[in-house]
Image (cartoon, rainbow, N blue to C red):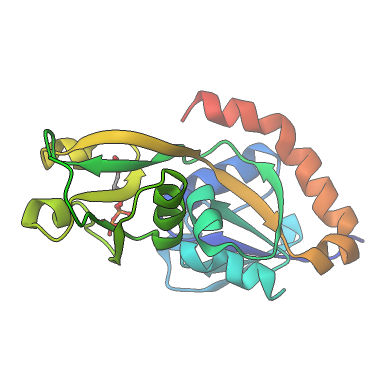
Length: 213
Ligand code: PRP
């Protein structure tokens, strides 16, 4: 009998797509696990237990080994920089990390950039040789250029609706984002059969999921 896998699943928009991919791979995964307030969900038929996490915390649970594996966006992986294995690009929840600003905005003498991703933003502007002050916000980032807190923002763009509705423009794509399957380093060795067999089941489904996103 294969060992039970503890899986850190992101609540919210990624959950629906991730659980569909797992189901397509033949695993008996509940569709509505994130509709309830329950945080630990046994999925015995799939040999798993879901830990319903805030997306940004998934790599933390996996690094500390309280979850063996997890599903997480590349944006969070880049920002959190945790010591985990990245096993698979699941090809779901596609979006991008971009620099966004007001159209026709002139370069500021002391430019400020607002973002939920201070590490990603600092690294990007450092690589561009631009000195900027990075201001960390926790949401509604698009407000910052509108009310004069920052000249530009670094944020996720999915459909582009938020920037359009706020009269902003996407100026640079920093990187493309999809969700990844990650693993704890020790679990990857100790529960290798279970993790490998999950990867083998998911792999053929990945392109198919990308086709109907
Ligand atoms: C994210 C992101 C953008 C928006 C992009 O925000 O920060 O604001 O989605 O999606 P779109 O291109 O499809 O409009 P989220 O909904 O996570 O809320 P937040 O403002 O609290 O970060």
